[in-house]
Length: 305
Image (tube, rainbow, N blue to C red; front, side):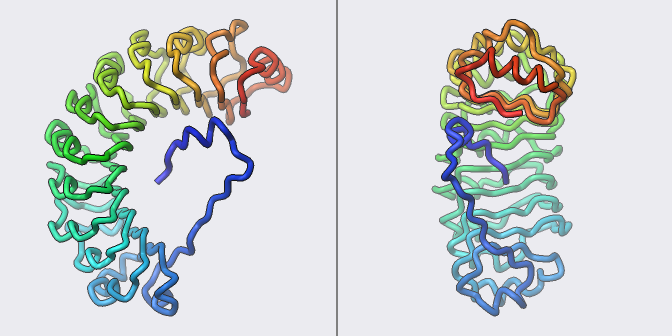
C-alpha cells in the first residue's frame, strides 16, 4: 500500500533509501530459506498448503493473498505471529475469522474490493492497527463501519476510495486520531458536506481527493485548517485560478500535489502558493519558459515538475 509520507515530501532527504525485502510467491522457494522470508505473496494455487507451512516461516511480516475469489480467510494465516501487514484485496470476503486476533503485531490490513456488508468487529482487537483499506466495498454499511473503526484505538490511515459516496458518512468525524484520509474515485461525493465532516477531525493532516473529476473546490475547504498535505492529482478540469486563491486560506498547508492535470500554465498571481514548502506539478504540460516563471515566482517553495 502506498502512503503519502508528508515529512519525506517536505524534506526530500537525499540520504533516504527504501529497503525492499525479497518477495516469495510459493512455499517451494520460501521453505528453502525459511528464516529469511519476510514478504510472502502467494499464488492462489498455494491455498491448500497454508495450514501446514505457515508455522515453518517465523519471520513473515507481510502477507499477500489477493484476487483469489476467496469467500473466507483460509486457515493458517493466524500462525504468522510476526505479521504486520495483511493484504487480502480483490476477493469476495464478507467476514473475518476470530482467530485473526492472534496476529497481535498487525498494523496494516487491506480489505479493498471485497464484499463486506458489515465491518468485522475483530478489527478492534488489534492494539497496533494503524492503517485500514476498505476502498471499493460498495455493499458496506459505512455508518456501522465507522462505529467499528472508532474502536480501533490507533487508526491514523484510512482508505475510502471508490465507494460511490454521495455524502461522506458522518461517523468519520468520530475517528479522532485519523491523520490521512483517501477519498479518490468518489466523483459524486458532495465535497462541501464532506469538508464539514472532516473539519471535526482535528488530527487530520493529509487529504487525498484525486480522480474525482473536480472542476472547483468548494469554498468551505477553509474549514480544514488542520490540513498540511493535499493531493489533487488527475482532476484535469480543475480551475487553477480559483484553487490558488482558496489554498491561501489553508494557513497550515505545506504540501500540495497537482499531478497529471493537463496544466499548461499557472495564474500570474501565485501568492496563494507562496507559503507552500513543496508543490508537485509533475505529469502536466508546462513549457520550459512557464516552469522557469513558476520557480522564480515561488522562490521559497520546492517545486517538482
